[in-house]
Length: 172
Image (cartoon, rainbow, N blue to C red; front, side, top):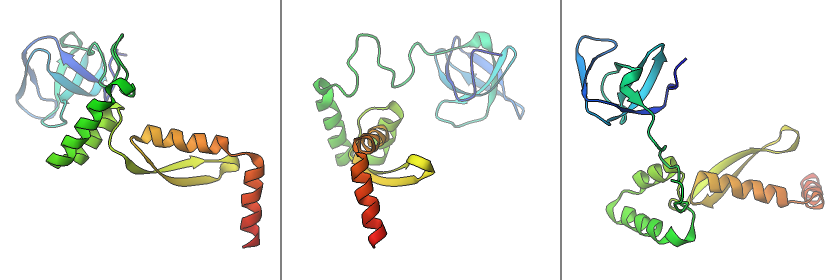
């Protein structure tokens, strides 16, 4: 087993070329290029461009390494994305996304990085007691925050409130 798994992003250790996996030809790659692992084996990985385009090609494990830090991971000693001291930056980024018509792109980037995005409506499914599935719509700046809001509200609900809701439903 390798230290890499399907779906990992890796960086190349050198520039060069390598054979395509399913057809004739070779892929050129540069040093420190980011690639997506599509499969692994003993001593090799199959990769394609990080933007998910182009053919899959083969590289030796000696040719790749993990990035020093994963995307969205806060570097040691840095401020986390939800720190109020840098909220201005995300507010400005949202305003620019609105101006430039890049809202869906901004939302995808914010979600992928796990940082605050624009306020949107999320449909969140939660399994309550005894297998009851509840779908709630909530406005939040990320799916993670939306899920947390729903869970916090569910935990804050006391048993007398639940009984009152059930009694009202039986009367209808």
